[in-house]
Length: 362
Image 1: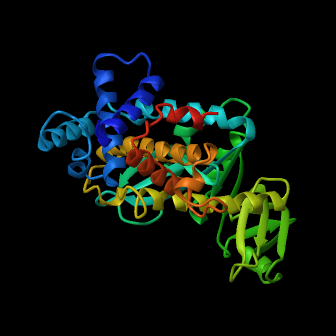
Image 2 (image 1 turned 30 degrees about the horizontal axis):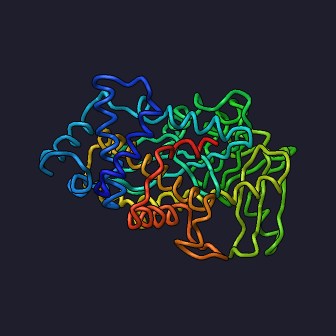
Image 3 (image 1 turned 90 degrees about the vertical axis):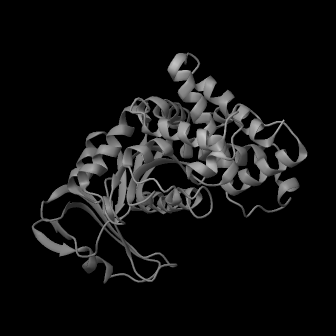
């Protein structure tokens, strides 16, 4: 059996478990999705010709590319149907320990941007929901921030403890009010020039930062935020010892130490985009310029990311680290460890597990 056949069998088996009742067109759509995931992992790329060359379909590569193109153009293929059920199951499994959500944007395809929210899992971020729009690198409007989170919010189990982390793009009053209305905690970076109000007095984050040095923080509870006087919020000027200047945070958490500790996890999403791009599947080089088609392609790319992350977890929990890397220390990410484990299984002719979604939900 070829390597591509082994990959395809493992992936299609997992997808059938996730969608057990799929028949007719739905079953065919899942079969093509499994092929896309298989080809993305096999090629390390997201352009369709490269994917087509790494799937076991019994057809010419040009025909396979056409099949993938039709799938990406099919309006019946959407994130709500073919990805969010998996994301919902993942969130339900992680909810007992609390959910930390992170949102950020990045360039994908040709002339497009994606805004994505993901959940922190073992120091990585697993994608939950996203939107793709036309545009060059830059900030998204606040209404899109809220729109992406409105995709994710119904997936959250009732009563779950949710914390949202965002950089300086995500400090809009409308977004913060939405999060607060859902009962979510948040810690978002903001600008030093932002105005604050306390008992009629006006000051800025920069004023707070000027009062501290490296390793110190300045905390202003029950403060009103921006000239809109939203709040009360917890305003924090936090000067980490490893930073050249203070980090300014707006939060609704009760304790500044918690807000700072949680915000430090935000940097994990940078590793997701690097895994999907330069160190992984090169999502920014898919050559697709249509946002809807890119969003559908991202369904396959995100499933591929789930699978490789699973293999990294399986390698650690199965004691494979010392065989494929080092016995005493692992300096590879789960994603890179998963890629190495997959290559090892292929090289040794060992079977690939078909339950790659299950370990993520344990």
